[in-house]
Amino acid sequence: MLKRLTAVLLTICAITVPTACKPIDTKPVVPVDITVEDFESGKDAEVPPSHTTPPLVITPPETTAIKAPEFARVRFAAAGDNLIHSSIYKQAASRSENGGYDFSYAYENVAGLISGADIAMLNQETLICNDEYEPSTYPLFNSPKALGDHMLDIGFDVFTIANNHTLDKGVKGLLACLDYWDARENAVVAGAYRNAADRDNIRTNEVNGITFSYLSYTEYLNGLTIPEDSDIIIGNALDIELMESEIKKADKISDICVVALHWGVENSDVITDYQRQTAKRLSEAGADIIIGTHPHVLRNIELIDRSDGSQTICAYSLGNFISAQDVGQRLIGGVLQFDIMLLLDDTAQERDKRPVFTGIEFIPVITHYDRAFADLRLYKLSDYTPELADSHGVKTGSAFSYDFIIQTLEKNIDERFLKLS
Ligand SMILES: [Zn+2]
Image 1: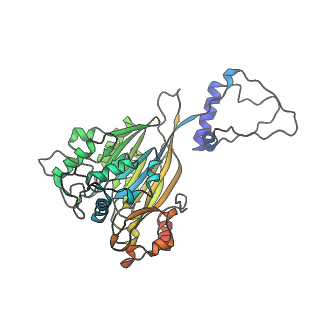
Image 2: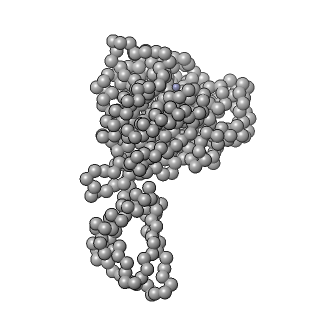
């Protein structure tokens, strides 16, 4: 990336300030390294003082000012599966004072991770059927409207809904779920569509001058199928050519294409060759960000090199964001955060859409509950303690301890990205 910056700088020098880059008389040319951090901090590159000659005062004509490249920047956050088992919505019901649901206790310790991002994306694994059905748990989920509203309240704005549970309540339930989301104007929702025209209307948003597009696909529907007389469409992760063609369309109408994949074998933290090959193909097709979910456990985050010199960031599985599962490893998830930077060049005929990713951090989140799933709530690992781990209700049936959490994280997440404190 620094090479790209240097090239841009040299180009700007060559085009706009032909004299500014020439050596001055016999004075040696001092190599100047300018980094992204310099641009970010607004400071100029420092030139070491000369020890042999007095300071040379030059008053450049106004036209010789070098304009530093400008970047558009967006802080992006993504969380894994929001898996709302009955203990979660029953506890929310018990905390509500008006007969509804209050989910704030469960999420309040991590809400800042979400609200602090410019864009926050969540895999809403369970349907929200517009309160047209009673809430229900595994294996056929339906979550209250109040759950979705609370996710919007804490700052999520993009929701992916192509999951193995998308057909849990049939076509009617999915249409009710789409009604719910359609009424939430601030929500960008991808992955399930009323018909082909709806699917072809690729979801986008614009933040800080960067246009994002969103696609969402699943490998599984838990054996359920869409009836032949229905027009609904659910993103199909098994059709790689279809994904490639939709990514190419999305790439044309956006700067950054985000692809959510609900994929992989549950409870396995192994990234398969198939996943790597698929991610590479989608990357070459134009996917800039790939967010994987479904296995309930973490798989690593990788930067995939692309033939145009840029990279795709791929999280193979972000694990569960929240759940009431009863296996220790499935209670260790997290939020992936990073900055996306795009070069802004007013003189270019076309925008350079190759992203630069900086500040990549995986912030672990622990789902904690007491005995029998009581008082289920999320903690950032930085706020979690060995004492809490020792009191975790999961310990009655599964290995769990603070050391187990650290070992699991260090095994699965690259240390470059893992933020343990
Ligand atoms: Zn799933």
